[in-house]
Length: 247
Ligand code: FPP
Image 1 (cartoon, rainbow, N blue to C red):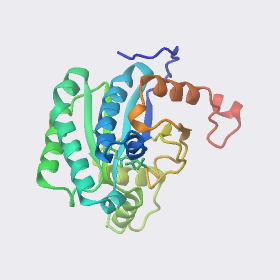
Image 2: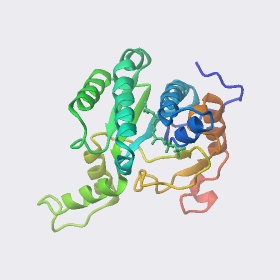
Image 3: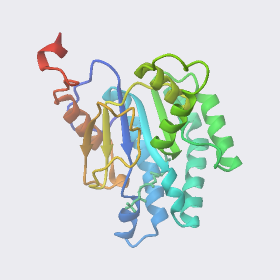
Image 4: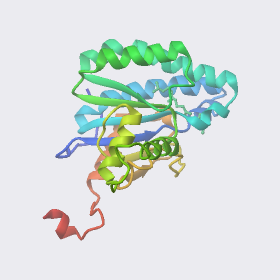
């Protein structure tokens, strides 16, 4: 159940929200704690956020957990993050099944360790029928890489000698993600940073943005409700005039 004090207007169709979870390190350092303590607190914020999604009308949640650039961090931090992700997949299985949460992972798999891969595959298989929320976790993810892989596939027989539509390309990206998801409606980034960092570049074509100064470990249902309410108050015209979109 959502612990929000805000009144929520539910959207008419289920939303796809993407979150760039930033500020774990700063949150920890400002408390005199090691950075990994921030990531651990970040995992608790993930649980709170996932739980709040259905009552806010969110049907798909994509979380940026580990970018392909994050391999450049110290090995101890990379190991700790991978361990946290593995534990999260294992521990959340029962709760996800109970709450109808389907877990998918997007991103490269060829550089992940076998224990992490096993945890991902088990989580995906076990929760495949979840209907309430599609939780997509981006691990070793780079949107440019996903776009390049999709573009490469255009050289195959199926696509040669015909023009390529946006739908074709979206399908190719979905294939490389191994999951289908609607376009992103809202991107949230925490910690005051305001950039996209190679996150869902194709899928965010018409996304709205919500930036908050709050560090990710402090993110909660209230802040998510604030972001969704702010999103619902915006006039999304998709390049047309307001009247044309309204029909
Ligand atoms: C960015 O903060 C955060 C990450 C690189 C990792 C995100 C991981 C988690 C929230 C924990 C586990 C996730 C799941 C899905 C269970 P930062 O370290 O770059 O913070 P900083 O900018 O303050 O240094």
